[in-house]
Image 1 (cartoon, one colour):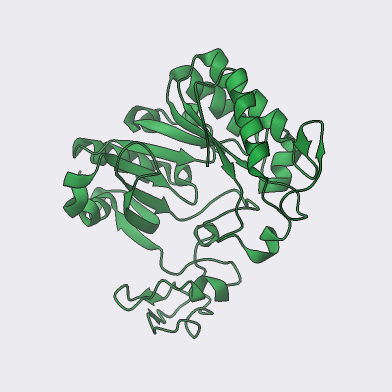
Image 2: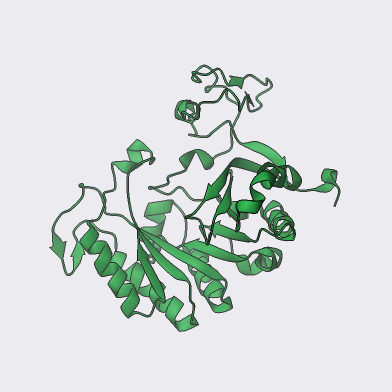
Length: 301
């Protein structure tokens, strides 16, 4: 495929090294744009695409942004950028103007010098499956260079309809945020039917590397009383963990099930005020529940 014919993606950022986004040392590619609006999102600047409003120009203390005119995203001087986040804080959409349109070849060229030290890549977001052609081409080209790719997804797009991505991916990392549809919508603003469909589908194919559930409480600060084995103010964490573990067990999946204690760091202030951290004891009880239900490997982080 010629460079001119290569798919182009909107890329939020590239992390050259990560030891927590899949097996081994990996480069992580964050794509811009997401169809969920998660209350505890730790990458809120990757949700919306820049509208070119220009509000960020004066907010940048390093002078790393320049007006492109005609309502286009500003020009970003990567060398001058301090990565302070002032641009996204000034944006009404909470978006970052630093997202770049890169071809597959350009993106892989940026991580080429790290290739000898990498086990593979992980493509995340935002929500990477919203750019399916670019994602598939990136996974194929990366694998051809000896870097197999994991797909880190919120599960909102049915993957059974994406055979090219299924064939190109080394595996999938899937978020199951809530089992109850109303609870999921309250947390994310989106339906969870596609998520649960993807969970069953990927588990049945043996394609899941990791499933994750964030453990968050409904405000009120950490700690709190306990009722029936669950902290007051909690979402139905027991139901989500139990049902997710059962799906993995029925499918014979060896996927890791990671339970992540919510932390407010990096979360939008207005959203962070509506949630609270669970205590470690609750997280460990939920991990034991997942093990009893047959999940092969369960971790708390």
